[in-house]
Image 1 (cartoon, each protein chain N blue to C red):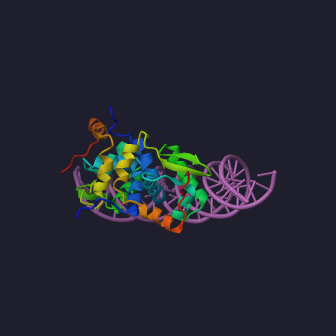
Image 2: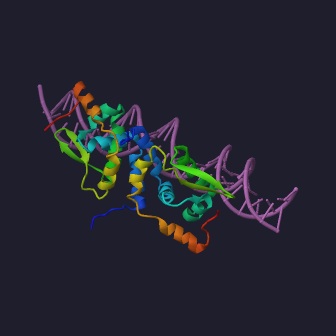
Image 3: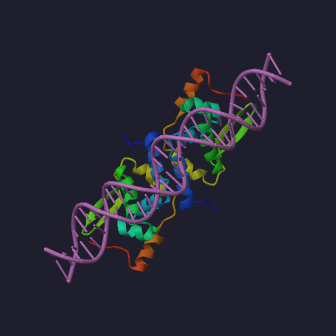
Length: 114
Length: 114
DNA sequence: TCATTATATAATGATTTGCTTATATATACA
DNA sequence: TGTATATATAAGCAAATCATTATATAATGA
């Protein structure tokens, strides 16, 4: 049976995580494009540990997953996560953030390894 | 033209507000039933000022509105709010909280004035 | 192997959050 | 009018949050 609702506890937890502009934007970007830590550092203009800590939180609840590719660790949305459908309905209402990646391309700081 | 997306700033703000179990449950209940402060105090077993403060935050962003009825002040979801469609798509995925009100009825603490 | 690059983790600090108690205000009703 | 009830606001406090700097770990490439 397909789950159509989500427990309140879990919903509140996920909404809290998404209730931070940096993380919300990250997840919106990751919904369509894999990214590595250093790209986010470039995009958000905050320190590398700050980005790592945001990603850690998202990973801890299973919203994103990581995968090493050579020197980089790429993050992506874990679409198999039990709560992805819940999150997707939120993300679908947000404006696409492709301009952020286009900006990286222009700067030559987009990572496209492997 | 109907708005289909919401700015990231505003979305993050609203998600943060809903990222608290008490407020999330409040809004879910209010989506279908008006309630007054004292009912929430009974439901959530926290102090009256705590409930008032949560409602204040929700009111400040326009998500709920208030209306005095005699001695009580009833809150309801402001469905005319610009961002209600965004919120509704979240609320629709949450389990209904009618048991909370049924419990109040049983206890005789449901307020049905006016 | 050594220097560089990418990332994670630890420690720290300022700010925010969510509760509490105390108090003020407004309505209801005897 | 005086008392009880409902709500809001103020003040205070512990815990959580989000950033920073410092440091550790892992892979790359000369």
